[in-house]
Image (cartoon, rainbow, N blue to C red):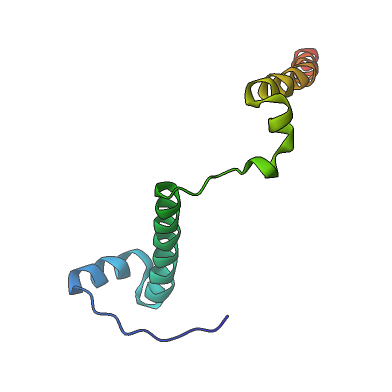
Length: 94
């Protein structure tokens, strides 16, 4: 992935605050990191506000066959024996 130079204008006070945190030589990396985080945040907000479903029925046939409630109950029931064995192992170590 290449890079491009971007000339940005910001208040002097903001530049000084950034420099006090990361130094003048860390300014570009800080701005890139901050911009990436903001892009991720805005894309997530855009997705959350859209009508695009998080899960599609065709991607999860196991839910269609049992129904969501029953599927969750079945999964939780399968975890119980494992949870018990972990608790027993922890108690035997004490």
